[in-house]
Every structure is written in structure tokens, then in C-alpha cells.
Amino acid sequence: MIKAIVYLTNTGSTGRYAEMLSEVTGLPALPLREAGREVKLNEEVFYLGWIIQGRIKGYNRAALRFSIVGACGVGMDRSAEDTAAKIKAKTGITNPRIKVFYARGAFHMERLNTVHKLLMGTVLKVMKEGRGDSETVKLMEKGCDFVDAKNIKAAADWITGYNRRFAKR
Image (cartoon, rainbow, N blue to C red; front, side, top):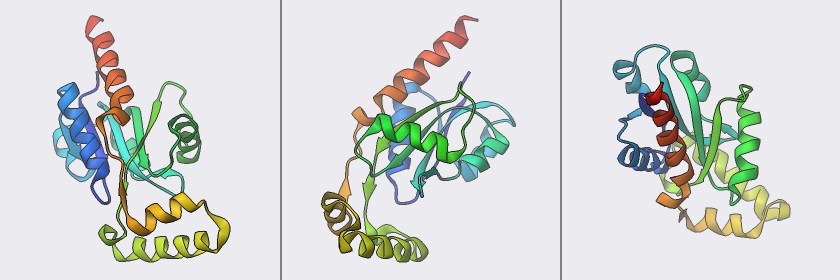
């Protein structure tokens, strides 16, 4: 049975999704750095992390402590189905029983830490030189926020169903 929603957020959108899941499922939403105090070693959790370089940030660290049965990456891609499969592979999630979701988040350059601001500034420059799609360039320049409960509904339904099946055992 899933005991908690554990998450790692960078600029806040992953944390917002974790709180939405908490509200719907009744499970506590815990930042990764605090979850170890609340959730026992190897207990089942649902993990959310922001996406960097196609991977769910913090997933491997969380997997060392908890039994992750489902995960969600939060990023800028438009397509949820293709993106979930890609991030599952890039994150190195090989267990077919771990369900992976994707939710489109927010991007605000000014909220990034210095290292990520420099990295994303370089990415934006390369994209402006014609190597990226123009919509993404505009979103990165102006900032955007796609956080919405409908983007996380499939994950919420899956968590609820998972715990319901477990409770029947």
C-alpha cells in the first residue's frame, strides 16, 4: 500500500502537483529530504520529480530508501504518453510494474538556481539558433505555467486504485 507522495521540486510546480495528489488521495505529500523521517525504509511510495536531461530528478536517491511503485516526471513537453515512456527509459526504470506518468509543469527562468539558470540560458541560446522549436523558445523566454489538476488525474486515479486493490487483500 502506498504510504506517501514523495517529491523533489525545483521551482515549485512538482510540489504543487504533489499537494494536488495528496488532496485527492489523502496521502501525505513529503519533500524527499524530509520523507525519511516520516516513511519507513522500503515502504511503498509514489515519487514525483522534475525532469532534467530527460530523467526524473531524485528518483535514484528515493529508490535507495523507498519502494517506488509509481512515479511522475514534471517537465515542459507537450505529449504525456511519449514523454512518460522516454523518461522511464532514461531514468533507468526497468521494472515493468512501476507505472510512470508525465505532467506538464511550469518554467520561470528567474526561479532557477544559478547553475540551472546558466545551463538553461545556454540551451535557450542554442534553441534560438534554429535547433529548437519556436513555441518552446517563446515559453522559455516569457515563462509559463501549465500546472493543472487534469494533468495529474491519471496518476491520482492510479494511486487510488492501487491502494484500493491492496486494501482488499
